[in-house]
Amino acid sequence: MMKLSIVSGLKESKSNQEKINERFKNLCDLLKPLNFKGIELSLLEPEKIDVNKLIEIKNSYDMEIPALGTGSTYLRFGYSLGHVEENTRIKAIERLEKYIDFAREVQSKVIIGLIRGRYSSQSSPKKEKLNIIHSLKECCRIAENNNVELLFEPINRFEIDSYNTISESIELLEEIGSDNLKLLIDSFHTYLEEDPIFIWEDMKDIIPYVAHLHLSDDNRRAPGTGHFDFKSFLNIFKESEFKGFASIESIMKPSFEDVAKESSEYLKRIL
Ligand code: LER
Ligand code: MN
Image 1 (tube, protein in one colour):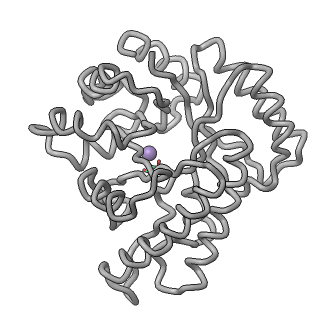
Image 2 (image 1 turned 180 degrees about the vertical axis):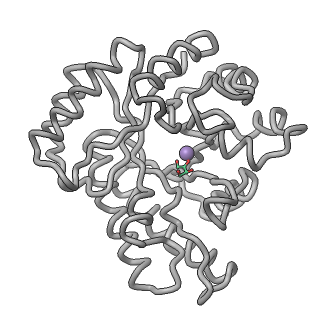
């Protein structure tokens, strides 16, 4: 059975260690009885977390941290892999190194999503793509040295300007050719970007590249609240005995607890 997780932050930048531990422990207390096997952490400053303490809590609940979200590095600091300024690209890689260190310790994977950045008027799509490729090669080298996998996420065209589709992203993976660079498929971006006529057939061919899933419905709310065909989507991965995690990444409304409960209940029937 596919393992279920959900995305949460720990507010590590604004909290002391005690608060971070308490927050993580509370998440485990809530999610463990709801059939979640993991918590995907969306972090800004992973180095601020006492990793040994977190591992102790994680192990005591027999939970995993399947992936680390890095998008806030771009949203808050403005650092990105495709940035026109070399210094800013280096900063993004340096930040990713911190996530990779943390991931090595907690046995997680590191997401390359919004951190690749948006095109700017001083640059050009072509230049920006070359910068992304160049930076990503460097990140792969660091990931390989640390035995950590990176998860490249196609993201819809309203949020980012590069690698919106699965096929463009696979081309990039092929070009980079690192065993530590895998694909993250998000149901929401799949819904917005892929051709509904071919997607279910095409999806079968991409399975070997995929190491992680994000789940939200076509309204970006909890799975089951919209019209996305989760049955067809998840069956493809089920039939291929996909061993990765599927993480709920939706707007957490009416509340995180409600989304966790409702998603788990809905997906139990499909997973
Ligand atoms: C990140 O995983 C993602 O899916 C983007 O849409 C950023 O929110
Ligand atoms: Mn996502």
